[in-house]
Length: 315
Image (cartoon, rainbow, N blue to C red; front, side, top):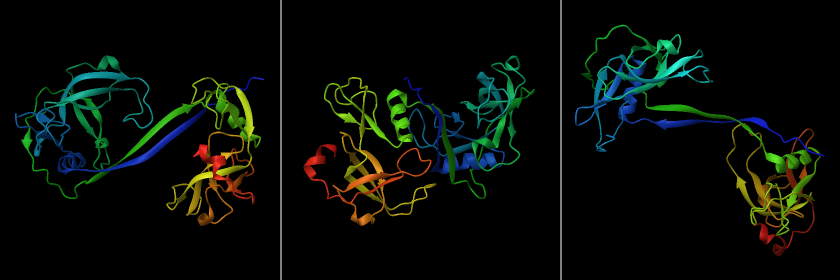
C-alpha cells in the first residue's frame, strides 16, 4: 500500500534585538521626528540611509546632514500581490528613491494606482506614518509629488531628546515542509505507537529516524525495521534554562537514546527519575500521552544498566 507523503505549513520566527551606534541611532530617531538624516563622506557624498563606515575607504563617518523628504525614483518594480508584513496591503511599487540632497537611493514602497503610474525619474515624497516609534516603518511609504524643486542638505548635529538606542526586528520564515517518503512512514508509525527505522542494504545498519538513504554508504534504504521500544541512554545534558512556551520545569534531562535494534541514537527527554540520577547506560522506555504523535518522554525500565561495549558505537 502506498502511503501519501505528508506535508505541513511551518513557521520559524524569533525577535532579533540589536543595539544602535550614534549614526543609526540619530537616523531612526530622526524618522520618529519626521527628519531624514544622511551622513557625509570625506569626498563630499551624502549617503542615505547613513552608514558608520565609508563603503569605499572604510573611514569612520560621523558628519550627519539633513536631506529632504522629497526625491526621484531611480528604479522600481511592481508588486501586484503584497505579502504579510509589507508596507502596504494593496498593490504597490518597490522603488529606489534618491532623496534631494543625497547621492544614494533608499528602498521603500510607493503607493501608486498601477504600474502605468510609475516611471524612473518620477518625483515622490515621504508619507509619514501616523504613529512613529523610531523605525524605518515611520516612513509609511512614498507617494507621487508634483514639484521638481530639489532641496539642498543642511548640517545636523544628530541631537534629539530620547534617542532610540536599539531596535527589535521580528524575523519570520513561512514555508511548507514535506518529510519525504521515509519520514512519512516513521511519523505514521509513531501515530500507532511504534518506532520504525530503515536498514541499509549495504552495511545492514538500521537508522532511526530514517532519511531514505544510508548516511554512511549513500545508498537508498527501503526495508523497514521496527525498533525498541526500550533503549539505552548514551549521552545526556541537564537543562537549567526554561524555554519559552515549553511547560517543563527545570532542571530536566535531554538525552541521546540508542533504541534496541537501532544503530543511530535519537534524542528525547528523560523523566520518572531525579535529574541527577540519570547516567550513561541507563535503560529506558517511551511514555506516550493520549493524542500525542510521539513519546512525551522516556523513563527507566528498572533493568540493570547496559554495558558500555553495547552502546559505545552510538555515542
